[in-house]
Amino acid sequence: MHLDHAQHGPAAVSADAARPDGTRRALRIGLGGPVGSGKTATVAALCRTLRDQLSIAVVTNDIYTREDAAFLLRHAVLPPERIQAVETGACPHTAIRDDISANLEAVEDLEDTVGPLDLILVESGGDNLTATFSKGLVDAQIFVIDVAGGDDIPRKGGPGVTTSDLLVINKTDLAPYVGSDLDRMAQDAAQQRGPLPVAFTSLTSEEGVGPVADWVRGQLAAWTA
Ligand SMILES: Nc1nc2c(ncn2[C@@H]2O[C@H](COP(=O)(O)OP(=O)(O)O)[C@@H](O)[C@H]2O)c(=O)[nH]1
Ligand SMILES: [Mg+2]
Image 1 (tube, rainbow, N blue to C red):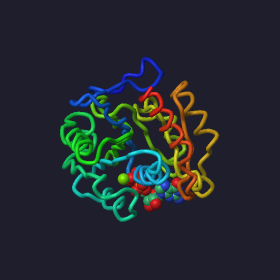
Image 2: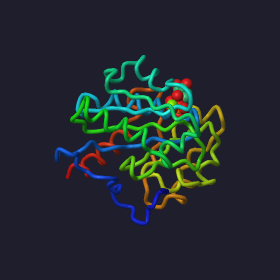
Image 3: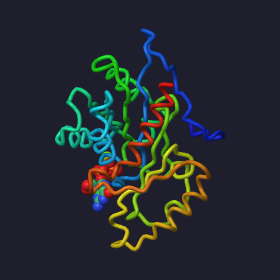
């Protein structure tokens, strides 16, 4: 499936909102984007910012390794039983869009073993600008790009840039060094996305993830309403 954003309201509900026992399942948020843009860094910062208020778990996707899960474990952003790794063995987008069974299994396993959960973050393996999540897997998706990848990326569009529920433009601290024009990126992103939100972040400081954490809180409020 591909994103269908005819309406720009809160993200649509994927699959069943209730678990088999009738309790509400966790909100699932996917993070996609090119290799190295800062997806794992965003997941880590979100966990550190939100873990005292929310019950959180994470699923990571890597092609042949468990590097991202290992990073999150090393940095102890959550207890180990709250982090699961999926090895996709192929282009990352296949496991988040085409055959989501391994990811769904991981998500449901986390709900069973460490639930009840408020929030599950699913990090895609790094992919190209066309990778998006199935709505059967996540309720909302964040697309992470960075200023060092070129300030023309928002202008180039693609479904991640144009239709993700939140576009994160990360590594703003590097803009002066790579000659990226943040105003231009903001204008291009607004043109591509209409009313859909954009967050500029730098994860070099603890508060850097603030705008993304606020957006996640808003999604959760809509989910639990
Ligand atoms: N300067 C800078 N580096 C960052 C920022 N966010 C992430 N990084 C670094 O960028 C590299 C890739 O980040 P990572 O989260 O692994 O990217 P992923 O492949 O999208 O998961 C790592 O070395 C991070 O420390 C940022 O805001 N500023
Ligand atoms: Mg990663």
